[in-house]
Length: 159
Image (cartoon, rainbow, N blue to C red; front, side, top):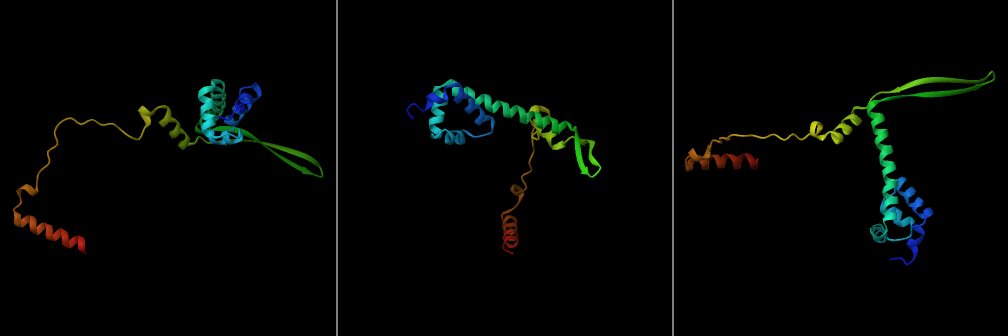
């Protein structure tokens, strides 16, 4: 382990910077590179120093929540105000327009499949009770009939 390097990262400034790296969406490997250490050293520090592990978790949690909020907003649709500024000899004219973003069905499906998988997942579990009878067609055929069938099959596959 890099001797003494971890001490800065346990300070308030170091922990805040670790949290910022995680909040910016950096992977552990990218964070390790920023710290000028190997990923294995970062994993060791996370295991050994709970403050480092918590700072990284806290930073990642913030981004996850922001993405969840953006996905939900997109799924439900929203409106926003667009401002257009025109400058001419007569002066400046500001035009405000309310724009609508329609709900996004893809975002809705993604949200529902992940938040309510028991109702919305594609895979359905179906139980079947009872017997399945399969008629054994080839058991009733003679050896000559089977040979003739094999020849037809061979002829089809060779052409």
